[in-house]
Every structure is written in C-alpha cells, then in structure tokens.
Image 1 (cartoon, rainbow, N blue to C red):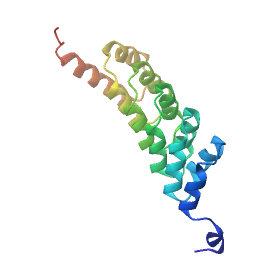
Image 2 (cartoon, rainbow, N blue to C red; image 1 turned 60 degrees about the vertical axis):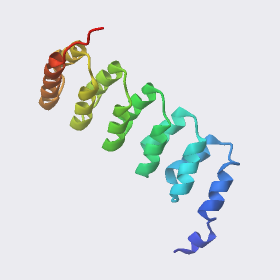
Image 3 (cartoon, helix red, strand yellow; image 1 turned 90 degrees about the vertical axis):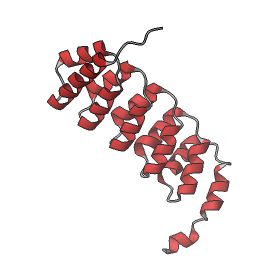
Image 4 (cartoon, rainbow, N blue to C red; image 1 turned 180 degrees about the vertical axis):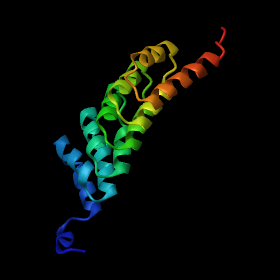
Amino acid sequence: MSFMDLLRPSSKTRVKSLKNIKDMSKLAEMAQHDQSELVRNEAINLINDESLLEQIVINSSFHESALLALDKISSEETLFLIVVKCKDLNIRNAAIERIKNERFLAEILKSCNCLSTCIAAVEKITDASLLEEIHNRNHQKPQVLLAIRDRIRHLSQIPLKTA
C-alpha cells in the first residue's frame, strides 16, 4: 500500500459521493478507470446516456465494467458502433449477440477484418439472399466466404414454417 492509497477515500465513501456528481463525463471517467469494481459499477448504474456507455465499453480498462455498460445499451446502432470500434474480441462478440438487424450484421462483415467477429456475424444472419449478396461481392477472406456458403446451405435445409 502506497502513501497515496492512505490518502484516498475508501470505496464506500467514493460510492456515496457518486450520487452527488452531476457531470456525467466525470461519472464515465470513474466507470472506466477507478480501481474499485464497486465504484465502477455504481458509476455505470448512474449513467443512462448511450454515447457515454459506448465510450465506457470501448475504453474501459476493466472487462467486467465494459460488459456491465454494454448490458445497459439498447440501441442496435450503438451496438454496431461498438463492434466496429472495440478492440476486445469478447466485447465485440457480446455486442453482436444482441444485434438483430441483419443489415447491421452485413455492415460488420464489410468493415471488420477479424475472422472471429465476421464468423459471429455470419451465424446471426438468417436472410439467405443477403448472404448471397455479401458472398458475391467477394471482398471477404476465404474462411468467411466458406462460412457464408455453409450458412446459406444450412438455411436452405431448414423447412419453412406453415401457418
């Protein structure tokens, strides 16, 4: 324990003081950088601005805090931006899991160079014609093209539901 640690208020004291902070950017900074998980989590719980939550997800030094902030995001557009901007593979894939809009998933395939992220996006797409369109552009890595062909084949074998 350093001398500076002795001067820093306890985690419980910092958590109590969070409720008095009106500047959301200060809360976001604490959510990203405070050494106490308790403080980070409480700061995230107090933030409802999706652009600040996005920044926390992308820039947090703490994986658990990034996931907590990600869980608070409801906008698929924001989730898409996180997939495109975030360097953490697990965070990107967690965001992809929450995206339902297949056009966003197709855009991920166009803009992402990470094989694992592209495969995760391919697996979420259920529109075979959209997959055909992506495949025909042929700007993908061979492994992604193979995954697209496999996904199209899989989708064509699923019987149509009758009403």
